[in-house]
Image 1 (tube, rainbow, N blue to C red):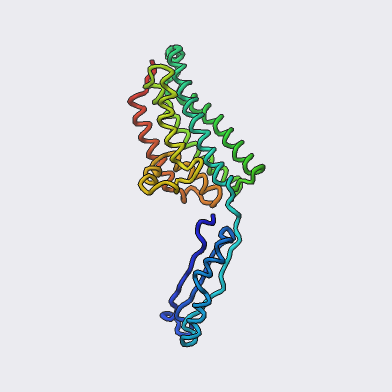
Image 2: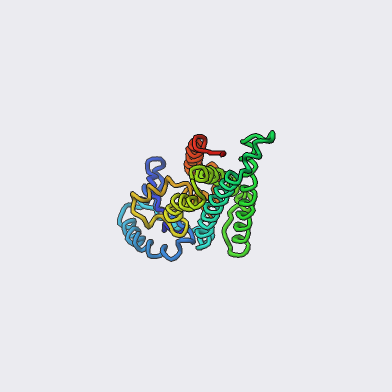
Length: 274
């Protein structure tokens, strides 16, 4: 992404092969760090190292040619779109599921369902599947529009899309649980937006949605790391731009899974049908 200028590798070769230089100096970087490579090489002072090599017995220091690998430039859209994706599903899912379930309960629709052979869990599954279906459609539209129109990076094409969608399903399940909790504890429909904003606004500001959390002090960054939206945004950025997979996003998956367990454990105690 260009955050690091490059890597300097110093290798002691004398211990394994006395015919080679005792110290080997290598520099690796990418085109994403282009503007900073030159000043860094001056700071590294290759000229001084070469002078040092000349003053030492021959073969003591070996300086390799810098290796600059060409990579795709990290565009602003590569940061912005994952944040907008998380922002979109956060509010639409919370408001959608909370008001839907609250309305069904207050209008007596759920009571009429109970007069049929329909099991309660099937009602929740039906609401959840419909919400996931329409949310995934919006996610796909955002991803494909961003890729084809705004040059958003998808390193592995459709494989990256499938991995992002799978993470989105996990996030949607978590948010639906939160929405059901809010619809159950709210006494009136006017209370629901207050509860949602209380949960969502801190995440919108502290999860790297519009700007990087690196601007915050260290203690606040540690708080940001426990927020589910932060982990979702990070996972989408890793999959899309860095080309990582599920196994490389273990931390993000673990935090989201922990939140999922906690939310549904709380929901099992708070869910109100009447």
